[in-house]
Image 1: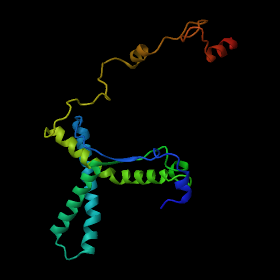
Image 2: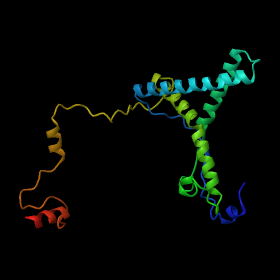
Image 3: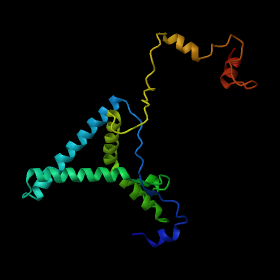
Length: 199
């Protein structure tokens, strides 16, 4: 519940985030090693989910058959994944309260809404990761059409040249003695002034 000072001190209604529906199914093709790594992460999350909820459900409702408990947990996980993919809470990170959200700002209520949206965003994160991994897998095997660009630009091709030749191609040679180093014309570097005064 908001206090009187928070409602009275709220100066703008644009300070809080929003909840949007995500309906974009476009995915860029990811490298196979990345998709396999994400699949391993999803398997681990599902295993942990079953390890937590299956014994809890069997303890709370012992009359459930094992297959019914597994079916109920699977349905709950699928529903959670769908909600996490379509519902996208976005908090205004500039207005989470005092000290980055660790204390409430008593003069406005929008920080309360933003903290709630941030917590909801974090709660739905594993389900969003699972849904996006499923889409990446479908793009990789060809069930869903995606952009056929595999982004592996992070690893440069080996050119066979030495480290010295690579450094020489990207750096300027050192200036000759008594010559000012390169830079914008008319600007004397502080380091050049220092070394000039030392000699």
